[in-house]
Image (cartoon, rainbow, N blue to C red; front, side):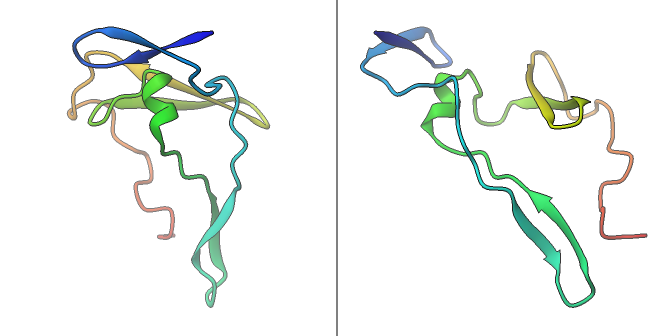
Length: 93
């Protein structure tokens, strides 16, 4: 089975590529452990993201439609002057 590999020029398929449908990632704790100001963090990286259509220097939107569900959507035609974060630094009170 071949899976698509997205590039800026064209949609290319590579045979025997790994499954892009499911990933199991560890949620780690980051922040100031001494002050007990920590929060969960998930790092997304790897070539599988290219196969999923996530390109470098583009924007994605992450929503939480229900507890335990994170939805990542690629934003087309989005500029940096778009919506701002309500709290860009979660460590500040």
